[in-house]
Figure 1 (tube, rainbow, N blue to C red):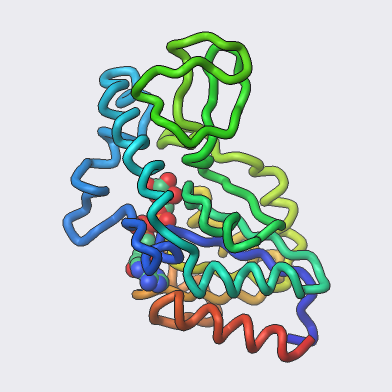
Figure 2 (tube, helix red, strand yellow):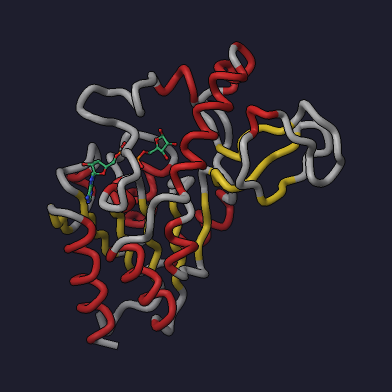
Length: 235
Ligand code: APR
């Protein structure tokens, strides 16, 4: 790892699976019993706001019952000790990387614990129930809060910062993501094209597995701490 300075890490639902948070694409293709199009699109929210609010309220309440696992903790340790640039880009809307202590962290698909007011356009920390129609903590109006989650058809957050980090990284690592959703699924190609080494850690090969220099298959809770150990041993 002596030739590595700048690291970009992408995580997906698989990194939180061992904490008890459901992944999106289960064997039945459903996300907690729902088709993704029925709960994770602006159209679904316009059609049936109560269903969508209840769905995310349940996911938000669930966060209070789960804890970061060994993979989140190892990545926080890497963040703390890595002397070069590091950016952890997560597709996850849970707060487990935050609670584990990662600081150089970006939630590209938004966060369950954040509310977005469609009236004042403000974002506020939020850990309650949106289905109860609370007032926006910023503008005090009712009826306008939505989950601060990037739905299908919407633009992920901070893409310019991510693209810059990908262009400058020497190592790109993807953990626990199926590689089914763009633009995140294309990060490996961008990083590799710019000369980075690329590593994937996942339970089974992702859709873009063949783009990686190296693939390690197994549970994130075992693979990630071992990899972090390897990286930190060499600095
Ligand atoms: N360790 C490592 N990988 C695991 C584990 C585990 N313990 N458990 C499951 N996985 C792997 C699965 O094999 C799968 O490849 O994690 C991946 C999870 O894939 P998805 O459920 O598709 O989740 P993700 O890739 O994060 O989804 C991307 O899709 O619905 C949207 O916006 C949503 O951010 C989400 C995006």
